[in-house]
Length: 395
Image (cartoon, rainbow, N blue to C red):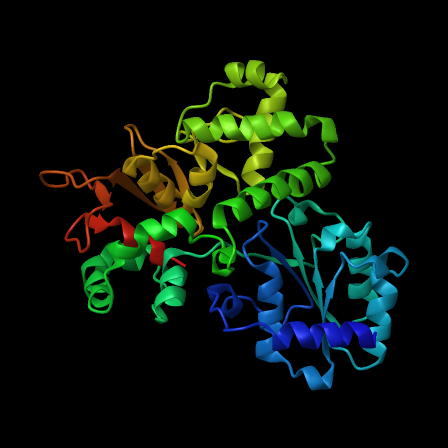
């Protein structure tokens, strides 16, 4: 146990400069079982350690971070470890990479029922369906940790403290908000850098970002998809090829029959793999209104703009970047998004209200019929013409 406390203290003491994540203030930490889902590379481990640093004193030893990748847990159960921890005054156990441990959900249930004085916070992959897990679905409170928003990226690189806004606030007050932000920075100046490398926190590391991202993508496929979904390793090349073909045509309408032929898998398997890639936060699927999986999506996008660069390896149009950025940032605000009737058009539903957006370059003339424009070359807007960058302030 002492060895784990030493590791915990070292990791917390060497966190470096704190990174403000909006989620840390949105979680109800009073719950006894909390699951933090997030795709590989978005900073789940750092998030747990930041929580430990902000809310606990390492000297009291009432909070402990554990990585279940440790070989110790091949012979020690989570439950017996948690029980010993609690008996020695432990209050909060932070379990990282929970899926590495067999029967993890059953043991978490045992902890919840038999150690009522203990709180457990654990991390898991977005591919995991915690809400469908019969062991813990009724007791776990699940939150999603996303990659950096454009707002978070700006706050880090420029050492600012810009606040997040709801979609309704942006639509009603975008001119005022943009004026306030632009009085401090030029948001257009940094937008391409965010689109290229700002979504994943590991851009802060002194490594080649593209190579690191490619490694992360492959780990998502090999571990988050194949392992969790229990797909045979022999299918990995087909899954990688499918992702690459989707990236080359994104945003684009998927030809399921052709993808089936190219990847040498059935049409049904292609459809299932699309859903797995979406769960892993590698792609986004845009449907027509009233449709959803397992129907074929109207368009497939990369999940975020960072993924487009190492996979496409060619010139990427401003229009493609703008649409992908808009979909990613607005989708993260818990809005439902469907395809509009023209290219670059999105229908956004939020709190029983529906908005139609046209994303892209500045449009001549006046907006009509309630159409809203998210424009990629606009610094400040007016009326229904809104700067695209401002949708990066939704979280």
